[in-house]
Image 1 (cartoon, rainbow, N blue to C red):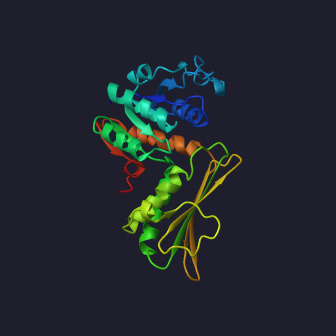
Image 2 (cartoon, rainbow, N blue to C red):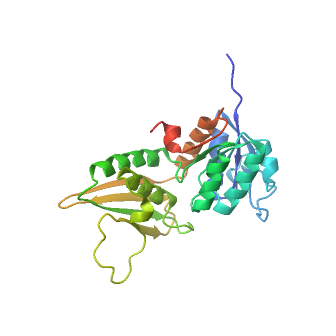
Image 3 (cartoon, rainbow, N blue to C red):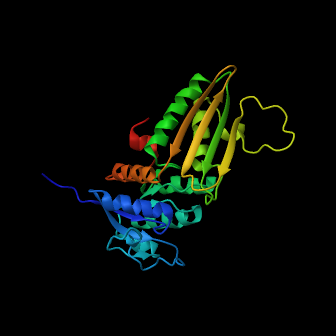
Length: 271
C-alpha cells in the first residue's frame, strides 16, 4: 500500500486570529504538515516558532519571505487583506504553488487577476470556507428560486468589532447566489444604505444591514418577507475552527490539479 506524502501547507497572516486557528488545524491534521508561516515584514512575531502561541513547537519560524515560503509548499492558505493576497498570488504563480483564498473585500480587478492566475495554478476562492455556510448558500439558491415573486429579501450580518470591510464577503456572496438564482445581477438590485427619507422599498431590491461589535465570529440571516409569512435562513459561527476545517478540505481538493478556479461548492460537491 502506497502512502501519499502529507500536503505541505503554508499559512499567510500566521500571527493573526485566523492564522493561528489555521496553524492549529494543520498541526492536528494527519495528512498535512506546516511548511511555512508568513507575516508582514514589520510583525513582532517574525522569527518566533509558528505554534508558540499554543505552547507547542511547529519547527517552523514565522518569516516575511513570500517566495521562500511558497517554494517549499504545495499550497498557501491566505486569509489576509487584498493587497497582501495579490502579492502572495504573484509569488504562487512564479513557483507553481496552489492557493486557498479566504480573503474578503477583493475589488473586481483583483478578482479578475485571481481568475487569470488560475489559468496557471489551481485556486479555491471563497469568501467563506465554512462547510455549514456553503450548505446554507445551497439552501438560499433553492429558496430564491421558489420565492422569486411576492417576497422581499433582506440580508443581515454581524461580525466582531475588528472587521474592516462591510458588508461581509459572505453576505455579498449570499446576495449574489440569490440574485443569480432569480436571473438577476446583484449590482443591479442591491441596497446597502438607508438613511433619512428613503421612500418606499424598491420592488425586487436585495437589502443589506451590517452590525459590528464585540467578538462575534460571524452571523448571517437572510429574510424572505412575504404577505402574512416570513422565512428566515440563518447561519451562526461560534468558532473560526469551521473556516479552518473547510480550508483543509479545499487543500485536499486541490491536490493533483494543475490549474483552475474553484469555490467551496466544487470542494463539497454541491454543484
